[in-house]
Length: 456
Image (tube, rainbow, N blue to C red; front, top):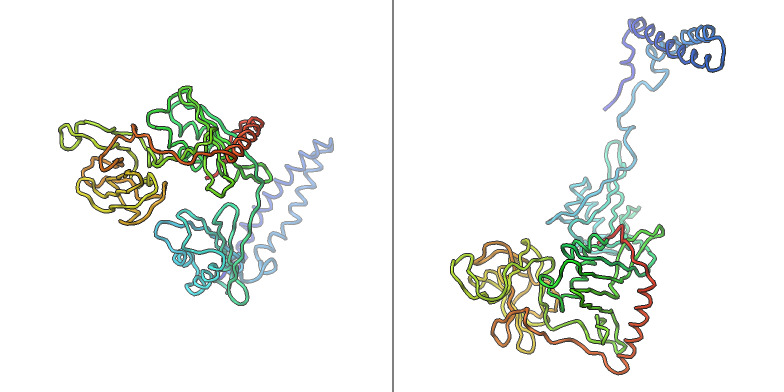
C-alpha cells in the first residue's frame, strides 16, 4: 500500500477556490486574536487588526505552495509500511482446553518459532502447569517490510515470580525474575450479620483466606447450624506487601478465633519441636484436627438432614441415611479423612459414588457426583479433592449426599464425636504455652485493619 502525495495538486483550478477562502479564514482568526490582544494591552485595536490582515495575505502564497507543490513539503510517495510500529504487544489468557502452542499460533506466531519458544520455556517453567485464566504477554517485532515475528513471551506463575522467553541470535532464551516483598502480620476482625462468607468479604478477606478459616474451624463448627447473627471472628495472618504498602498476597493464618453464641474457640498454628507436622492447636494443646470432617464441601448449604423425610422423587416417607448439601455443579468435594477408596463409580440411585474406608471402623460416602477424581484402591488424604458436585442418579438437582458409617451402619454426622488428633504434653506443651503467650501479645499490639487490595 502506497500513498501518492501528488494527488493533492491536480490543477491550478485549486488555487482560486482553496487559497482565497483559506486566506480569508486565516486573516479572520489572526485579526480576532490581534484585536483581543490590543485591547488587553491598551493599544490601538484598528491598527493591530490592519497589521494582522496584511500578515495573513502575506503568508497566503505559502499555503498556495503547499497545495500546488506538495513535493516540496513531503516525499512524492509515502509507504504505509513506514507507519507500522517496530513492536506490537498482545495479551492472551488461557481458556479451558487451550495449549500454549495453540495460543501462540492463534496470536500470529509461526509454528516453528512457537515450538522453539516453548522448548526454551521448559528450562524455567513447565507449560503443562498453566492454569485457566493465566495471562500471557506476547511481543512481536517487525521483521520484513510488512511482517512480524515473535520476540518475547512472558508470564507470572505466581505473584513473586515472572518467567520470560526472549529471542536471541541463536534462538530463544528463558529467564526468570523473583520479586521480593515485605512481610508482616495483619489482624482482621468482623461481626456476622447474615453469613460468615459475607462478613469475611466485607472485612476484606480474600476467598482463599476465608476458605482456610472455614477449613480450620470445620472440625468443631457446624457452619450450617451454629453460626448466628452477632457471632464474631478474628484472624491473625501473614501479609506480603509492596513498597507502597499494598497487600499483594496473604500467607498462613497463625492465629484465629470465633465467638459463637458467647462460646469462644481460639486456635494457634504451632510447629512441634520433634519434627511433627505444623497444625492448629487449642490453648490447652489439643490439635483441632479430627479423624473426619463434618462438612466435606466449602460454601454449601444444608438442604436435607439425617432422619425420616418425604422423598422428593418417590413421594413417600423414607429414612434419609445421610445429609444433603446444596451447591453448584462442579463444586469440589473433599475427602473427609485419611483412608482408602473402597468404591469409585456408578452405584444405582446414588449415581456417581465414592466410598472411603477410614480407621477405627469409620467410613464415608459421597453420592450424585458429576465427576470422580479418585479410583478404587487409591489412598487419599483428608481435604484431598475426590470429585465434584452433580445431580447423577436419583436426584432432583445438584447437591452432595454425604454419609458417615460406623462399623457399616449409617449414623448422623452431627451427632458423632470424632476422635481428636495430637495432644501436646510435658516439655512440648510448655514450649507451646510460651508460643501462645507471645502470639497473644503480638495480636493485641496489632491494630485491626481493613485488608484492602486483597489478592487471591
